Image (cartoon, rainbow, N blue to C red; front, side):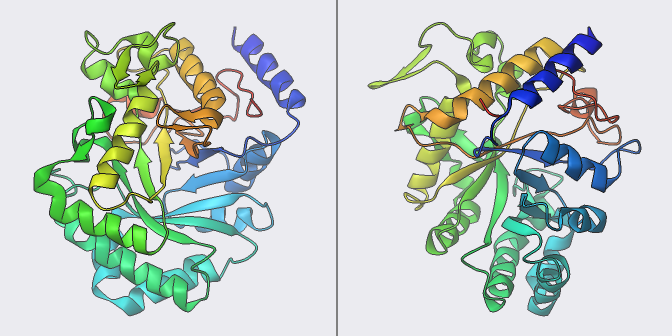
Length: 340
């Protein structure tokens, strides 16, 4: 079976005429059995993926990206936020070392200042106050380098910041998080930068499988499952994204675009976590994003699939270590056509 999957994948790669411009893949490095960065970058090129999210300024990866023409979203790790928020010179140095030293041979697209930070989450509350000051300082450093039109500075959030997401038109951020979210959204609006959002129908389904059906989460529902006024939703991904747009608009970001900075489905380790479901979700997501959502039809969605590899050192429950499209030996788990 594995050999057939790999053969099918290689056949799909050979059929690709051009890259899917809406799709990127997250390159996580929390594993002790992963291929060298140069081989990983070559794999991106082989499968015609032209966008990457990297969670920290990994020197080997940045060096390997030189001349690759891959557009990069580079992360500022959560543990660096206090230093970069408190000392503008540290932010300038960070940009000099990790961006300007590689530009323009590395095509930076976004800088994601922090990942999934919330003032009410125990593991991130202590750094929440530093997110916006760090964004401002990194943006100032990027602007000082004359790169503000080429590289947008933002942060990556998750859906836990929303208090309402159903129906999608009622999407809103939690009232007690307004003082955290609203100034970030306003800054993004003022700098014409997108908000990066991690969207996982998998977790919404598995946390409430009685009310959120598996077909609705996998893009396989044969009919509309949720009506929101005149808009009908046949998949959960669209509903979650439109709910986030509604929340961002209410927070002062009516013109702020959303980039889906992570979305994926685990192939093992939890409820509904099978290779078949992971393949179905990812295949359908790739096909779907060109068409937009019910409230934003015909507007392609920029999405970063999570993730390139299974990462055996990733903390958390077992399923967190099984989101890879590829095994660490670079063999595809299932066939995907990125030109869909």
